[in-house]
Image 1 (cartoon, rainbow, N blue to C red):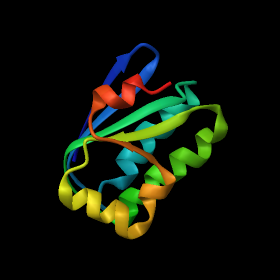
Image 2: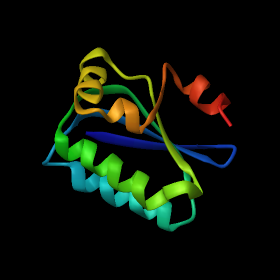
Image 3: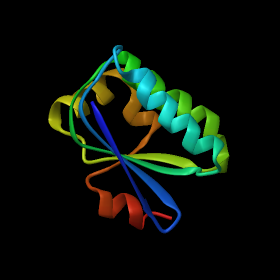
Length: 109
């Protein structure tokens, strides 16, 4: 898994690529929680290059969303088919706002 971070207009965008699983989920958790603890409460997870996500990866996103609460948001965008199916089967498509691409996620206020 690789994580790149971009900041646009007060929004932190995490570009996550590769495989997000039990082996590396703690890495993402650390980066997300540092960002939230630093006061960055508007987050977009751009998963356009994420090929696989396990339940451990989903748990990290849920943990971060709970930590942010109503003070901000985590939006998810650019899901590949396989990752989209995991979000749908696990019910995470009802928990997170999912956008077709980064531009749409940034537009939403």
